[in-house]
Length: 221
Ligand code: C5P
Image: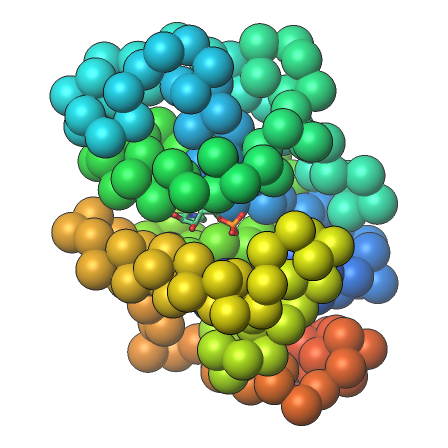
């Protein structure tokens, strides 16, 4: 049987990470969170005094940190220069800066190469989640899913994850700004592949979304 490659894209707060991890665990596949990689490089730049709004400075620094992503859906750790970065990459500072860093073509080139080699090395197959997986990173994926949800549902979920550190309205503003930056950038913007199946998660539970995606993968494998 060929390894099954599942690409899951969509804007922030649509349930990509929870869905991808659960689908990978249920199907016995590896898992790769590409957003965590863009966050990790952003965290390293912020920690090392790189001006994240200067694309030239970001491009010059892009090869310096050693980023290693775990692929176990039960425990998706990420390390930067040997340090566990799983916590710090979720800070509001990183979230606010990540779209600028991930728009720099040299950053994308490094990450896409790493994502493809991780996918090629995954025994049995992998679920890869992000923004440009179906179109740019893995255009020949076995199954492509594009998750969507209303802006209100996405903001309510994200605000809950942040334990109310930001109000739902503030979270919604931040999400809309980040989606606009991710969709509007020149190099591999957030977009749905023509052959991706769209799943609107607004009124679905996580279990329902996972069931739907697992069924779509089983159909194609
Ligand atoms: O998925 P997550 O919200 O952690 O992603 C953080 C950011 O990383 C996104 O807002 C986007 O700027 C960037 N990203 C990207 N391409 C991907 C995954 C994430 O540009 N494949």
